Amino acid sequence: MGIREPLGELGCGLSHALEVMGERWSFLILRAAFNGLYHFEEFSEELGIARNILSNRLGKLVENGVLERTPCETDRRKVEYRLTEKGLGLLPAMLALRQWGETYSDTCNRDLVLVDCRDGQPVKQIGVRAHDDRELGWHELGWQMPDKIGTPVDRHSHAYTKEDA
Amino acid sequence: MGIREPLGELGCGLSHALEVMGERWSFLILRAAFNGLYHFEEFSEELGIARNILSNRLGKLVENGVLERTPCETDRRKVEYRLTEKGLGLLPAMLALRQWGETYSDTCNRDLVLVDCRDGQPVKQIGVRAHDDRELGWHELGWQMPDKIGTPVDRHSHAYTKEDA
Image (cartoon, rainbow over all chains, first blue to last red):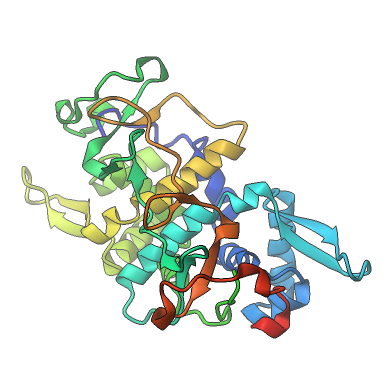
């Protein structure tokens, strides 16, 4: 990547995502939510997570707008944790992490395959796409200033030394 | 998702990914590596990370095959940390996390845009794709048994209650 982004700078999207999700249990709770779990007791039993940690992580996910607390429709005394639109937006990141883990772990459970319900065909490996849908690798990517969008980036004009930063 | 995956089971790809990457600094070191940083001193200065934590995290990333230690070509006394193929494979997950953070953070720095070097056009939002490239949302996804690939999944036949598990 020709221009280097300021790395000390923690205002980037990745830092924000990691503040919200940068903890193992948060991702595993999110996985459970994507699998249709709603109740504290379900999360607790299915994940085998300590109740105080679960309570803390659910609170943090609600606070960050990833989950929302709503009364259960059939039993108003019960509370449900539902994915918000922001929470649903984490699906590509979670699947990309998961597919990477599946590719590189020998001990991975492959008893279930994630498919498109409509035709039962597995989803594709998640990748980076150009505006015209070409798949892009790392060596094809670069940083560009917002006012120079549309100007090609010469990736090889930079030697990635500290002086470039 | 009609069938629910076993959530207590930590052998899934996501768990493996989180064991390797489930820590905030690991992702930030990886971001720096994708930006072309190779040397301990560069990581230390640019990231502002304590040297003992940096050393620990670099070691773990090497141990897990995400980075490899190689002698510097121009100065054999120096060691470089280079992304392996396995490390490069984390690009979609990292970008998906980052794009999510950019979408939902108000304070996000947008001074640089990630583009396709060839034409300087921004990369697309990372999404989940069907085998024929259609974009899929959460409600269109389901789990299928490997021997039933190609059989549509009736998502609505399941009420996501604990009894389904």
